[in-house]
Length: 273
Length: 316
Image (cartoon, rainbow over all chains, first blue to last red; front, side, top):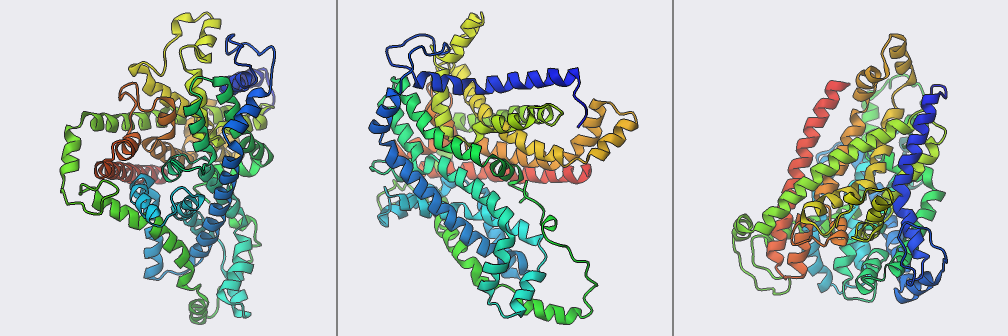
């Protein structure tokens, strides 16, 4: 980096101004969420008599607690399953050059191109026949399959660049292939596992279309559908709606600021693994 | 960015294997078994492959989503699409939104990355701050913006306070503006994502190369064009792929901001798929639209991949 010059200061101030513009919606969000419905002054002027009533009301009336629990459950289960099956599958796909291996890998890559809108309608029927519609397990099953191609792709790319001497040594010393995977390969995959964890967790947590389809009409909700339902119910009561939006954003931002380095690196390195 | 494996593992300088045949035998014996791929393959087949194949099949039938008795209708849905003004409009909107998002988001993302990748003191804070919108649930940011862009919303209030009263608009209620509002909101959310990927690319440019170019008398613009730009090619490839495919599939933002309206002014293929299936019960037609979406995604992504990887090779 070059030295700090007057031009650097000008750039610094410009960038901070840009960041303020980007942050402006968040200011309005918090400002209105803290405001009683009786306060009808301009949305950009600071609230004079802040109150937390909107938050308690939104939390109770929107049953956001249950939605939060479902979101945590669905995200945790899906991500664990996806990481487990994808890393295991990537091991032979990265190491074996036989035709079945290349064919399987290409099949997974095909999944990167297929938009889930194509599969989600016929799968809707299958889920209904299986009695899974309206339960969080429909979502866990869906994401466990949907996220496989991308995750396998990440793992295979990373594994191909890893030397195989360690696993060969472990197998010669008498490990079964599964033990070799568990105790030798998996620990070496830690960096790409963090990336895959971050990208999958954000994708699953934020998805709206799938729970909109598979949970509609049931009491079970994830955070995004609960918010959509809440907006539909309290159409013009924006102070209350904004409180609900803040509640839904808080856990995400909390995790983000705690783990920002891993999260940003995960996104930045995403497709090159 | 994840570390390359060689940065974590000691890289032993081994002499070449004196017994290549024995080594090959050993490799064959210790190769991980095929059934490791089975759980992933079964899940993928159940959730994606089989339903997609069935989807393509349903696109040629009059299936209504419930009735097990349905009949083959051939290309009816596709020829219907050619006469369906809403569908043609939605396809056009989808392409327009995807291209606009791709251009604006990447231009802004690159500018932000260039601004942050300097000697400024706030660069780490800015990176974390500017990326933050990208992790927030899109449906939530879209509802937030629906209020901000309303007639009495904060955007118009801000223009009023700045003496720009003429700029006040019913952003989501005017057919000519709503589509651009959708683009703007999406770019607001994901410009930081593009920035982070460009930043990773910028930081992979060795400083010595910059210094050497500076010593040789290259100014900042020349250094960007001749040194940085070619080395940014991989980051650009990733960014373009992510933003254009994300733009083609865009659903949440449209659903929450405009619901496809006013009229059909912002309907995309994804919103039509949803409406046709779940409010009109026309599953066959809806799936035919999904097939069109699939074809567009496949053509765009393979075409883009071919062009960009050729440029990437030419640049490096």
